[in-house]
Image (cartoon, rainbow, N blue to C red; front, side, top):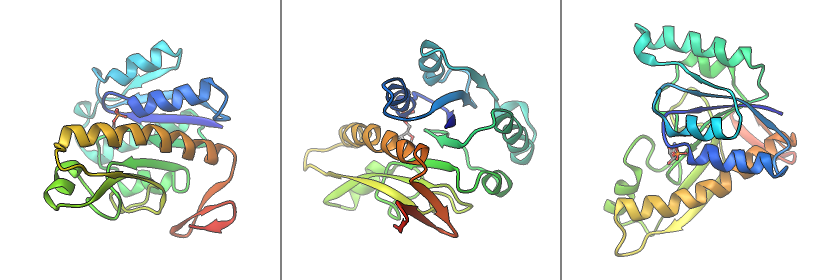
Length: 203
Ligand code: GRF
């Protein structure tokens, strides 16, 4: 399948997906990596892997609508089967989400529906939760609210800081995101109405 990845930063999840494409584990090809930030390290990772990159800076646009319209055109021009949000730190307009419904994935660093939004690691520690983690989900109009496909659970240790916890969650992200992309590329995963279906079973 043709995969487009959207990033804003380090791109370690992008790297995990690149690695699994290169090993043949994912039956797919990343055809473009798009970043809203020119200095995102993920762009370097993509270039090192010989993948096309594109910077579309939100600063060049007057409104979110104008930016997303251009972004949608750019994504469309890649003719993707799957759009992967991997640390793309922007809220998407309903129009954009609608356009790629059922073929857009996101990873969020919490056990959704807990802790949508930012600072998830600190919030989980502050709440004295026993577990934290990450979730891969289909993207819908509701921010961090689409149907969850896979979650990785990480125990919170007494000595954890947001940084140490984030590191362990990240390691799990690099396991579950390539796995979900693999399943999607094998047509085992779809979104029906508002729930995810895996091997014909509603999740
Ligand atoms: C990850 O923590 C992901 O859950 C969140 O943004 C971060 C991206 O990290 N959506 P990276 O750029 O993939 O290293």
